[in-house]
Length: 195
Image 1 (cartoon, rainbow, N blue to C red):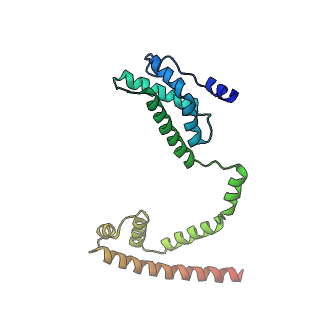
Image 2 (cartoon, rainbow, N blue to C red):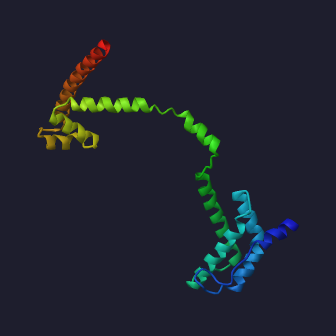
Image 3 (cartoon, rainbow, N blue to C red):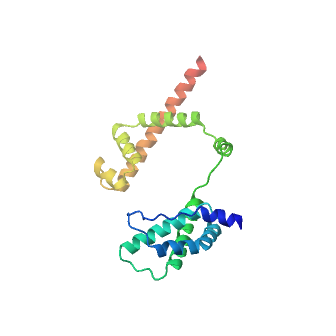
């Protein structure tokens, strides 16, 4: 019984709503009558009643503003309970999307994903060398593909008849560039073995 009284002390309905209008005294009385049921609705959805006063106070504020806009509320108690339930469900859904993780768990998760920075840098360097092994038109076509241009547009910009022709010509240019790249790699390896 003492806990119930303590919970009731947390409920405080202001005399004026957020628009500055006087809150109908019948609405305040209805809020006091439904307080215990509203608290249980919040507990049902959120497993805790700490947000119950705030939710009911917001429902009263909303109802007061609706009355100020000449909307008819036939019965205050069901209106308030339904508003409390709706807001509780909304907060439950919002809270389910947010998962709080403590620092140790976050560090463990971050450590589980190996970031091979050296491999990424090596791959980027190789790609840059392959690109350098292409002729000027091949580099332009490559850059357009990286920028997510489709083959039809690349064909138009490169002067080819259609998308298929542009793609075939690019593959030929890429094959030549890869041959140059492999020759470059072989020369590099031979140069390193002499040192």
